[in-house]
Length: 357
Image (cartoon, rainbow, N blue to C red):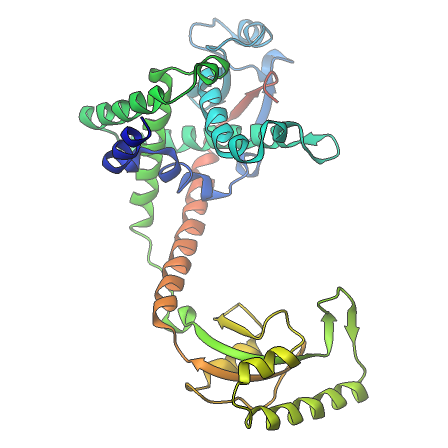
């Protein structure tokens, strides 16, 4: 059965939630409350979700106050709603992600006073569902949808996945193929909306922004918190003494055969080696690194936090630079998509049943 699933994932891999929702939409890091008015339902008729067939808000409020059933509407985003069955699919996915690794007791673990891990994951699920509903409604205006064959392929994947589930999980999470297929389809559409939007985004990442330099170095601290957690705040005389010490170390460093071992024995940093680029350390440190060629030593570098002696191992690690550029491009695309999402989200009122929060 496991081999069957692996083969299906290879064939239909892009339809898995981990590669769709969790790869793209969950990385939006958008709190629902950031852009959308969120209100509970069931306490008053004016905050109630109106399910299809309800004659008015008062009737809907009565529906929402009843005990949860699989078909109960628990989240409403504009004209789109999610049932409790949908929410349970997401909970099952998170269960599969966390419980199997961290144990069943994880859900009752108190993260902070009055808030358990289970409470936080429920908020995650509500956020995911809200994002799916907002993006799903936007997909219609963008003309993005799935073909009948694509839906059938997703269903085939879900059916294979379903065979691997335990009877206990199926019963506990009220899982069925239809609901899971709908959730997976929603996530695939959201992933396509994301791709469609970021493909038209021009990024401004230069080679210098992405450059990665491999160095060995010695660090003598003059301010900030040291490795032992103690605040360092030297006066001018003490800083001058540290500078003299740094100059002596640099002179000695140029004569040793194994500079890395020498650096490890004398540095006050956690490590004496690093691959660094813009934003990783102070500008003074990075500028000094970027000014070096392979095999060169820097002069004593003065930075707000202390003094450095730097040896350049590789002035530009091209493989790491390519990966860094991809990371920075993805980050910029995500940020711009978040801006788009924030504008879309303003169009919709979000209501959440008090029965799930």
